[in-house]
Length: 115
Image 1: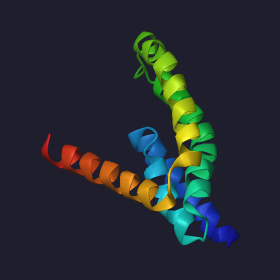
Image 2: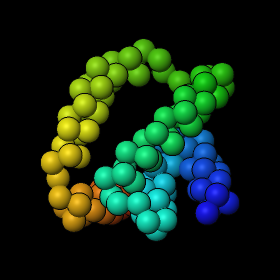
Image 3: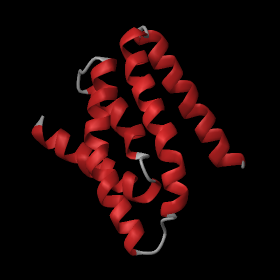
């Protein structure tokens, strides 16, 4: 099981480096496959992705690919949304949560393929 989690971390890190926080998209279903219940999958995914995002952000910054001023504009809304999302996570039924996650993945996939 340790090897599984190490591989999961490697996959999440690669996806995070390539696509920003996209590693979380892979982490949630893989944690679920490992037997975690959906709420724990989402929360654990955030804990995994946070340090990866910090490292990726630093790498993007060093390469000159970060617009810090634009990022600062988004942060207050993002913090508010994160607090609201964490609060909602406690209230939403696991089946509804799974469906919301699936719809977001489908919409994201379609956007990537056709826009």
